[in-house]
Amino acid sequence: MSQLPLGLEPDTLPDDAVEVGRIAEAWGIQGWFKVHAYSASAEALFSCKRWYICPPEPQGVKRVMATSQPVVGLLRIIQAKVHSSGPVAKAEVTPDRTAAEQLKGWRIHVPRSSFPTPEDNAYYWVDLIGLEVVNREGVALGKVVELLSTGPHDVLVLHAPVAGADHPLERLIPFVKAYIDDVDRSLGRITVDWQPDY
Image (cartoon, rainbow, N blue to C red; front, side, top):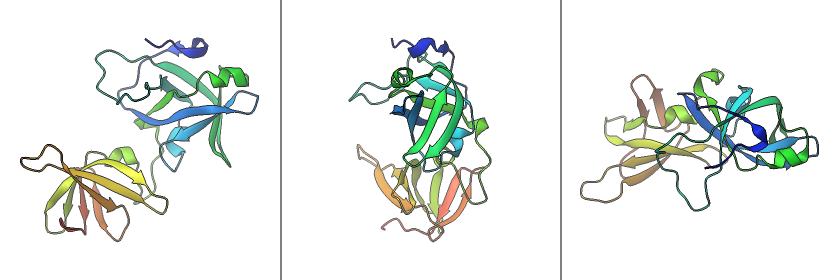
């Protein structure tokens, strides 16, 4: 079992915890560290000053459902900002570079309830995962399993079951106004202008 670095206070993940990034290498000599955020926008990451961190996953091991409670530490953030190299932060327990280096690789979770309200027609990735996607004709195209950031725009990754096949059919749909008609989270559905044979 991993031990908490720097004598961090042990805690448990909130019920609505979302993994939003990982701690990267130390930045400077005053205890700052770089953060690899999973979203192009760091709003969700910076919306909370209490980060719940879990150990890095071993190399080559895919994430599976945990059978026991994960090791979780509460990391209190003093300051966070976006630098030219990306998001950086400083915590109460990182007064210097040596301390910041001990957090490298640890996964950051924050409660979904702490996210700022998105602007109209904007969505957090976590809110799109699991939604069913149908086209204008009502044909089911699959379920959103992840999003990819390609630079110019995000792309929905869908999985659709295929009778008799071991693996689902994967579809990629650009998440842009030209193809996305409606996102209805209350119905758990995204309506798109897209055909099954695209």
